Length: 184
Ligand SMILES: [Zn+2]
Image (cartoon, rainbow, N blue to C red; front, side, top):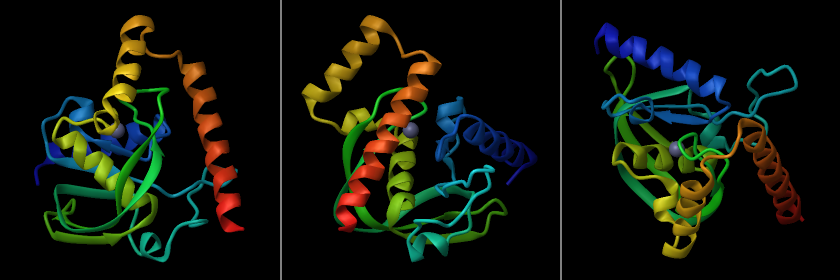
């Protein structure tokens, strides 16, 4: 771990929070380092992180999570989630991921780290690890769906920041609605 690595970690965490993202991989900021920063904790009205809605396994992981050289040790069952990405702003679609993962890597101090988690954190880890392989969530959609998004971007470019905020709101509300339903 060098000072450059530490600076990169600090900058990536700052960028992730500024962009209201829940994760960021170094290649997304143009650095070819196998590094992820993640924080899936929801925030309260004052913008402070809470543990509301997190699973017990998620709560046990210290966030923001910083992980170098992540490797999947174990991945079980499948789940789906409507994902978005700071590299594909304004687009969301349902992606299949493992429900539970065990991931090994190194922390900020170069010490070995093993994360065992489910919930949004498990999904986010898999999404961010894809970035290290140059893969985006839209590459995991069906050919038709993925092409639809790519063509839209080609034709009209990315949505404006205002449109991105609107779309995020819509997805968040739809997600909350589904959660209410599945609770019943
Ligand atoms: Zn992403």
